[in-house]
Image (tube, rainbow, N blue to C red; front, side):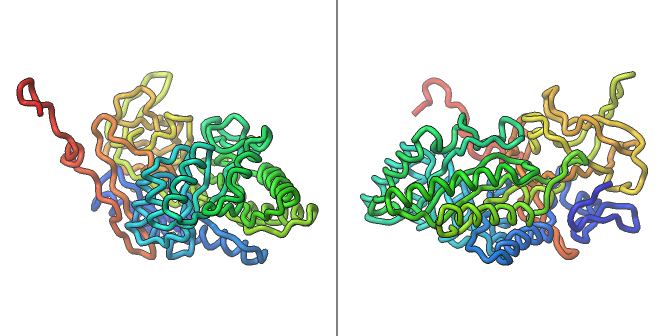
Length: 440
C-alpha cells in the first residue's frame, strides 16, 4: 500500500489525510468528494523553488492551473510565492477574484479571443505567451490602440516528443501549439515582434508533454532553445532574458510509475542551461517552469460510496460508485490508471480483484479496470488516489450529474472550498422553450 503526502491509517483503521478522518469527511460533506492535501501542495511548491535558489539562478515557478483551478488554490499558490498560468478568460477572472498578484500571471492558449486579450491588458498581467501569427496581429492592434506595453513569450515547438500519450504530447512538430522551431515559423514570429514598440519580447517558451519520468527531453529542449536565442542575439543584437521550459513532470499514479523528485528535474534543467549558455557565450537566462500535475496531482484524493455490485462468472467483478467519468474522465479519455483502497477498512488485506465502474450511462465509464481490494460492501468508502489534477477541472454534468464538493485539509483542519452543485444549479441558466405565438 502506497500512501501519499500526509495520508495515514488511524486507530480505527480509517484512511486519514492531513490528520482528518476521510470517513468523517464523507459523512459530513457527502460523496463523491475531492479532498486536497494542502501540506503536500506547499511542500512541492517549496521544493521546486528551493532548488532554483540553491543553484543561484533567476526563476519563476508558475502553477499551471488548468490542472485544478479555483479561488482557494490560487490563494494558496500566492501564499507560497508561485506565479500562475491561466489559459482562458474564466481562469483569469478566477485569479483576479482570488486577489492573485497580476504581475505574476501568465496567459497561455492557442486561440485567445479579443475579449480575453483585452482583459489581460485591462488587468496589466505579467505576460502573454504568444501561440500563433493571428494572435500576434491581435496583440499588435490592441497594444497600439491602447498605447500600452505587454511582456510576451513566444511559444515554440522544438520537435521533441516526450514518451507519453499522444493526447498529452505537445512539443513535437505536428502540434496545435506554437511556432515550429525547425521550419522558420519561430524566426518569422521573432521578426514580427522583437522591435515592436509595445510588445516586449522577453523570451521563449516550450512545453514538451506531460507525465514525463526522465530529464533527457528537457535537456534537448533547453539546448535547442538556447541555440535559437543565441542566434537571434548574434544576428539581431537582441537578447532574450527568459527561457520557459514548461512542465510535464510525472507523478506516481500506480506502482508502474517511477517519477523523479522535483529537485532532480530542475537541477538537470539548470545545469543544461548553464552549460549551453557557456558554450554559446550567452548570459544565463531567467528560467521559468510550469508544474501543474506535479504540484496538485497526488495532493488530491476522491472519496466515493460503493453501491451496486455485479459478477460476470469467469470474467470480472464490478463494484459501482456514485461518481465516474463525470468527475474523472481521464480513464475513459486516454486510459489513465489509478490506485485505491477502502477508506473505512484501510488495513484489511486486498484479496479480491474488482473493476470500479462509474454511474454514467456509458459502457466505458470505468475508473479502475483492476482494483485490488478486500471484499467490498455497499456503503464502503472508496478512496481513489492522485485525482487532484484534471479531475475536478475536467468534470462535467453528463447525465445531469452534479459536480462534487471540494475540501482542503491541513494540520487536522478541514474546510469546504467549493460547494457541491445542486439540482437547481443544473437549470439556473436555462430559459425554457417558448411555444409558437409567444416567442419574442
